[in-house]
Amino acid sequence: MRGMLTSCALLLAVSLSASQDLPEAFRKGDVGTITSQMASTVQICHLEDVRMYSRSEASTFLNNFFSTNDPLSYKVVHNGSSRGSASYSIGQLDTSNGSFRVYVYFENSVGDKQTIRELRIERETE
Image 1 (tube, rainbow, N blue to C red):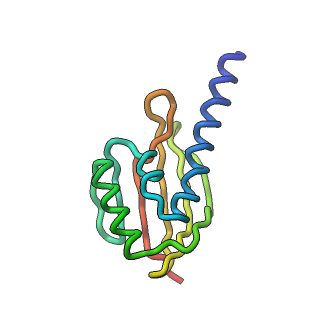
Image 2: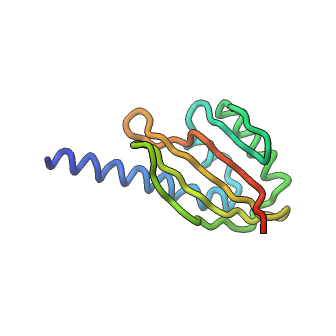
């Protein structure tokens, strides 16, 4: 029982660490921190375009995105979990080119480390 509680506490700590780094990374446009938490392939949905990217391709995509959308602020709107080992975070990214809703979907990978499996960036509508 004690071992199971320790494992749950460790999983929670790892999950919180990963999810706590991301708001600051989005706030700064820190592509390295964001992509370091991605799976080897990740689905990115930007506006109407949906594609699977390797981690390096995702890095290029995010560099391009942040070069035309200089981040001003990022606020977490909601965190939650679904489908057993999956969790998600929804945030609002304000940029020099408008506001975007950012959805980040995580799944547990080897060693219960959470990795980003999907990233959605949608223009915020008023």
